[in-house]
Length: 128
Image (cartoon, rainbow, N blue to C red; front, side, top):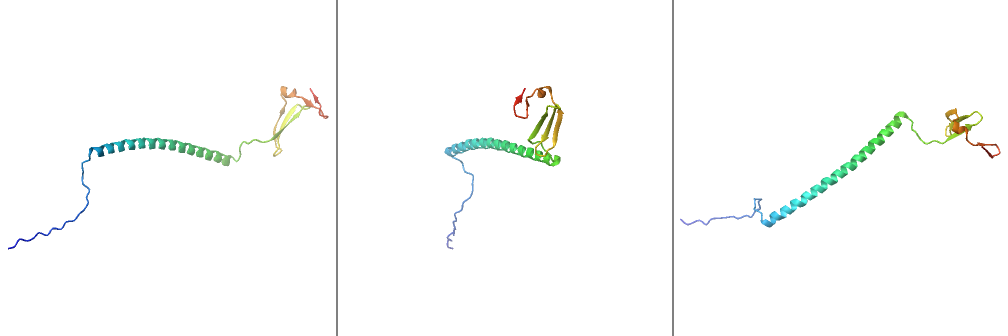
């Protein structure tokens, strides 16, 4: 009987297998770890800053909402309004009137200091 010639088929493939690192590869990995730790610390600090900035912005937004809700609920607010103060030196009274609506705001007797004010005569001269 004649010897049979073996038939061998060879294929090349790639597999992921555990491989021992060289000293240079270990040193490079250690450097990478140190750099990544620095990056992580920086990112965490940046996140803290951004969170505090957004927290402040959220608080401001909440304050704006509360203020506007109060305006809607009460349907009024304090604003600067031009008024006219009328000193009646004859009756010794002070009358305060809103110029935008003509509404009487205050009417009261003059104080001692107000009674000491200068009186302007009809011709514009000042009498003390």
